[in-house]
Amino acid sequence: MKNLLILLMLFSFNELISQEIIGMKEVYEENNLVYKISDDGLFTGIAQVKRKNGHLVYEEEFKNGVILFSYLYFNGKEKRLSTKTIYNQKKPNVLLKEFMYDLQKEIFEIHTYNDDGIKILREQFTNGKVSYSCQYLGKKKHGIELGYKDGGEKMTFRCEYINGKKNGTEYCLKADGTERKMEYRNGKKI
Image (cartoon, rainbow, N blue to C red; front, side):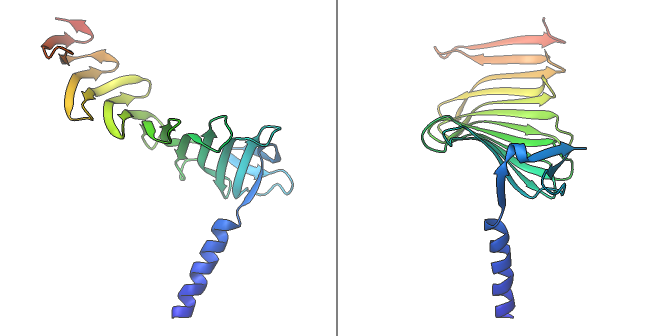
């Protein structure tokens, strides 16, 4: 039983390290699936875009023709991730999550999508803590928008949106510590 477990782990490890890495020009897309040009088979592996100087710019990871992840890199001497995108494995080319990184390799923004690839949440981070959060329905704000300071400890802004329009009480905490509240209905101040 122990030997069987070791063999299983070795095969899994071998699959991870033996992924084929090719250029993006060596694959093509048809009906939301990616195929390798050389054999017209569904592609499993990593397709990359590199500059003439060898700098890695962008890569996508596939399994059986379905995109799993994409990685965009900063231009520089070392390989630094700028954006990591996770795709829905059950619906090819549909986004699930995007992570944006700063030059210090910290996440500064995350976009979250529903199962149909429609944006539902945008979050921004300062020093690893949420400093801004807003619910969306596609391109329009739809839900609660929140702003924070002091490492996410103190709320400085809150407003509700319905289909891109302010609706309800907007709360602002000014820099001098005074609070301001305004009422909105269907995008209009009341």
